[in-house]
Length: 324
Image (cartoon, rainbow, N blue to C red; front, side, top):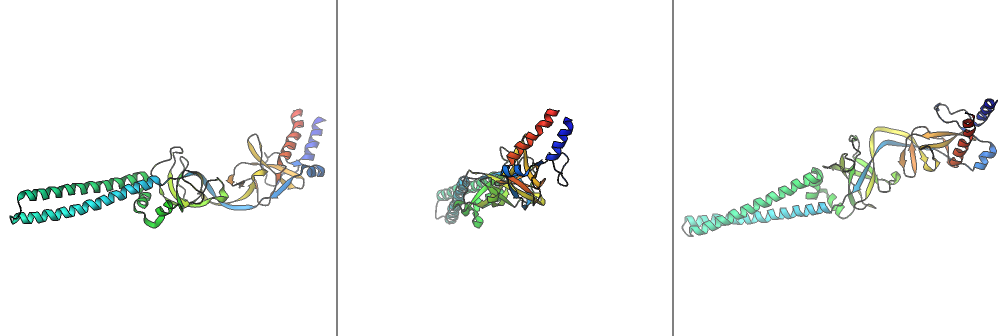
């Protein structure tokens, strides 16, 4: 008798699942007209949004002062090369003049020796200055990589000037460990608020020579508009994945309720009937979630009152547990 009564109760409170629903989905919740009105439920219709699959990574706005210091040292070394080259040229002319006069026996050999000594000293200083330029160039390549080193040392195309005047910023992006380089990552999206809708485009500059100490993944230099970004800021990075665009729905986070560490929403299948749908995977999109499994465009979900429905669902499970 108890079993028959329980069966009748379940039939009253459970409506047929939507076509295609998983047999393991929890039963739906059927409310009476009075219950539905008293619950004060607010629903919204889910809209589709097309987005490519994205990979998340981390980034940091770099302080360019070390780059400017390296550039200043390099420029000073170049100036030293120019000065020592000029001194060497004069010393060479003087030595040649004194040598000619010595051959004519106009000046003594001692004067020629002094001129030769000055020439050798200037040649040694020029060689040392040249080696310093080479050393700084190699240092830049080792610490910055070929492309960034070239831009820093030469100042070509105005990008360094943009960094100096804070029109753009230099960003180091670190991929998760073991992640292969995506096929399309010439442009990524970055945001300091971890808010995908407000992210801005960042353009690839080059690969970085050193791995990230924390992620141990590959690293790359990007640059982006500087508005709102400051040196040292940590950024969230969204990198286009390998897959083509996949349709998804934009799910308001306030529609989500949690039970046993799982995320659920209540979808209205027919008037006053609400199916509980588990959200297995999602992408953060500002205050909302992008979901491409379990929900479809046009679905109506509860955005206010879902916790009430969850409590009612749990309450209605109690007789079944007691009967066991």
